[in-house]
Length: 396
Ligand SMILES: C[S@@+](CC[C@H](N)C(=O)[O-])C[C@H]1O[C@@H](n2cnc3c(N)ncnc32)[C@H](O)[C@@H]1O
Ligand code: SF4
Image 1 (cartoon, rainbow, N blue to C red):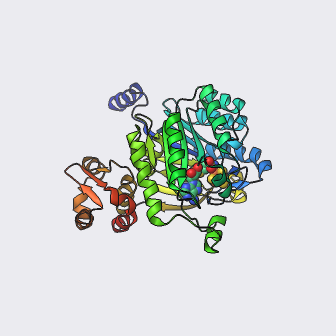
Image 2 (image 1 turned 45 degrees about the horizontal axis):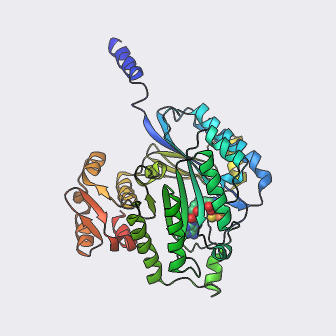
Image 3 (image 1 turned 30 degrees about the horizontal axis):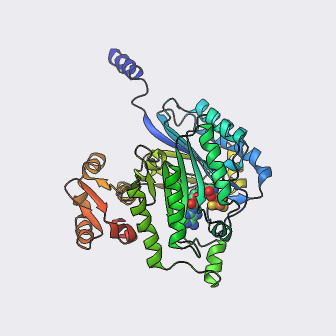
């Protein structure tokens, strides 16, 4: 009895320091219109669904209330879709409920994704008031005709206006999403957009290579020969020139597609890349909790029906066995430019990485795709372009 109470008191005294850290993702599947390249679960013209959807997200949180007691929320990411398309009161309601239902005393970062042209002073003030401290703006490019061609409904001027508002309200951590390899995009387009972001001193830049997704209008037009993409050499040049330019201008290239000023790496995404626990709320949201990977229905009705019955709206789940966890840890960890720390690997899995992947590591080191020393394993510059070749070999 005595020992039991001592142990209990000790854990109370330690407060919540012993708790595990958790990332929370909220999926907002609404947009003003559908961009031609986008395959995210997001829908235009469903404004009348917004009110009900937010209530269901809160219902979903209720189901998790008892399950997340041992976790401290470290980061929240409100993504989409276009969360900034919603009136501010909805975002307020979602965050208020997270604070009410989960352990939120140690939250370090709360990001909201926003599209230029959907923000106003009132929304931004609400974001600030409820604790959002990072705005992620989907800019893509500052070339207005290119924006039109890819189905964006905003102009470069909308970006400048939104950016000014964001800074005026006092946000000190801003990310911009940019894309390269777009139809008819030139090297000059890419570099001019990057130069503007450097001039504006944004804290974080995501610089994404266009992926032609199966179910998109852009893919259809490409197959029909209606649009042309920059060839592979030019696309790679856009990437490597971007890296060089941003590095020369004070940005650290810390993940394949991500750059930041010192101290501004995205803490939420680091949870994904380091394969730590996270829970996703909303349709199509994914979670990684207690050794299980699971994902929600991507259909409103099925998601609502489950929640009406008080059941988790899970469409599928995977048990991650040790071997798979190790492969994921390596594949996601190698996305980070610093790579995998061998000691961290040993601490987490109780085995040396070379004991599992001796041949594969040797082969890709010899082929110049991996750099390996006593402490680290990371992609070389060439390896960043050919990461898929290495990743295939890492799968069990
Ligand atoms: C969740 S999305 C949407 C965020 C926000 N709704 C917007 O469009 O600005 C986040 C980012 O992914 C990138 N993205 C979306 N589809 C892409 C694709 N097919 N290929 C490469 N990047 C893509 C865009 O840069 C986008 O801003
Ligand atoms: S890129 Fe953003 S705004 Fe465009 S459809 Fe996708 S989620 Fe919506």
